[in-house]
Amino acid sequence: MKRSRIAVVGGGITGLSAAFYLQREAEMHSLPLDLALIEGEERLGGKVKTERIDGFVMETGPDSFLERKTSAKQLALDLGLKEELVRNRTGQSFILHQGRLLPMPEGAVMGIPTRLTPFLKTGLFSASGKLRAAQDLILPKKKEEKDVSVGSFFRRRLGDEIVDHLIEPLLSGIYAGDLDRLSLEATFPHFAQMEQDHRSLILATMKNRPPHKTNGRPRGQFLTLKRGLESLVEAIQAKLPEETVITGNPVQRIIKEANRYLLVLRSGRVIQADAVIMAVPFPVMKHLLPTAGELPEHPNPVSPTSVATVILGYDREALPEGVDGTGFVIPRKEETTITACTWTHKKWPHTTPEGKALIRCYVGRFGNDTIVEETDPRILDRVRSDLRKIQGIEATPTFTHITRWREAMPQYTVGHADWLKRLEETCRRQLPGFFPVGASYGGIGIPDCIDQGKQSVQDTLHYLGYR
Image (cartoon, rainbow, N blue to C red; front, side, top):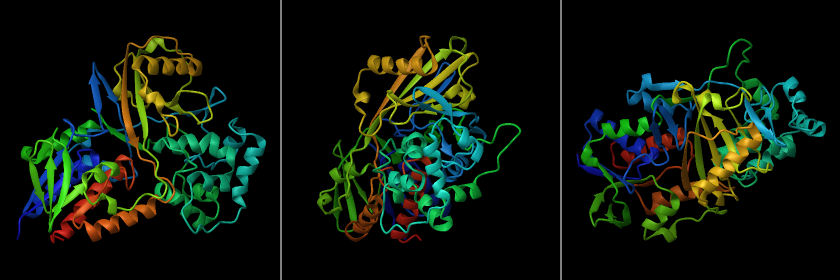
């Protein structure tokens, strides 16, 4: 059987997953494959980055993954990290409303109310707002003929107040985007399916919600690793043959030559590949391809949003008693710099030494991410001012850590899913053996990226004739 070389461009979690599962397939089935994983930066992992300092385990990028999206947990198991898995400690979550922290209504699932009493008692909505949301129970379903925004879909079903005060801070926080521009089909298509299957979102969610626990805390839905998510990166790198990993030498251009691709690196080195898995943002891919002008343009292009994480460490006794919970989110209409806050020492107790506290704040959102380019002292001053007003935290942190992620959050605007289909078809037709995957395309969460990496392995092996 002919020997083939596969190049994986991009060493974030998507590319790493693809490289790991390619290597595993080759070893398990004795496939004649050579692998090259190429990352332009000196380190692998992309936005998955953990700082371990003085007993603190601090995530500067994503801090966990949903267990129900099984691929991330499975990757950890495949890497032999079963004993490292940690489940989040559950507790009350809050929403900032008119400057005050109000409890998230009990029974709200992704912002959709499923329990009557907590919904009626909450101060998040006016009486008219609650009445408008209840209309979801009687409104007929609407057959959408085309993609719509997440915001317009939920406003039609539940009204503006529910969207602006509850759903927007919960859902847009995932994408750091504008709910009224984000594509429903590309981000939360199951909600549209729920309407078609059950008519009412409230009734559908009530039917499928997990049972309410009256004794003890409910089971956490998120997982991470004891030494941080970068443990995944380190474990994959340890599994890959050293000669297959190239870092600090980015691809400058890609040339299609007959049935293969030539990848020209900054050093001048040229790698010949029979197939290429492109785990880089779409703008980067376009820049590398001489035929980029033939790729379909997104119908509603929006630049990715820049965000930053701000970590503050404290002596536990220096913080006010405050409220008991795991953190809070902030609607766009509140006048704050931070968009959300996690009380990490409560949600993930293993990350913080005894007697210490760890708070992680997020800044930057769609249409308002200039704060990310401010100086560290300026960002820190504004974050501490918000914490002072919201929680009464006057104490000076014992340490701080700010990480900027510039243009890190792709915006899946209306029409994204159709654009992705056209892009994949164009690649099949004009760039056979060339597979774009990653956060720019089919989901930005860690499990979504791992799923794409694994699928690209199957697509590549099928293309090369091994499947």
